[in-house]
Image 1: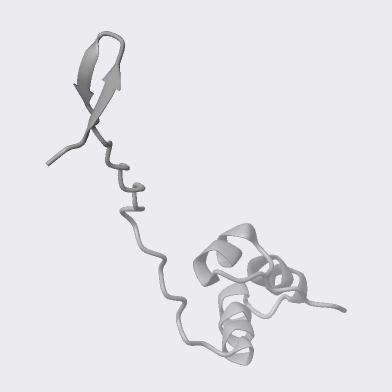
Image 2: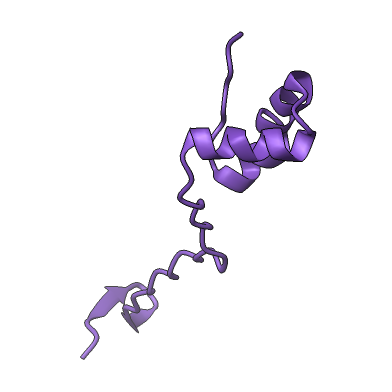
Length: 76
């Protein structure tokens, strides 16, 4: 039973409030494909036709970073 609090105007039932649960994300994080860096660069060479600059653009692109969930940095 709820306790009562006395005030000048009479007794009032105390009422607690429940905390609303935190909203959860509906989407789950995608799992990155299990490729090695060597396999990734080899696939980029196949796609770019062997051009080094095009491979560099492909591997370091923002789309590739989003797809893998990691950023790849190549140093010449």
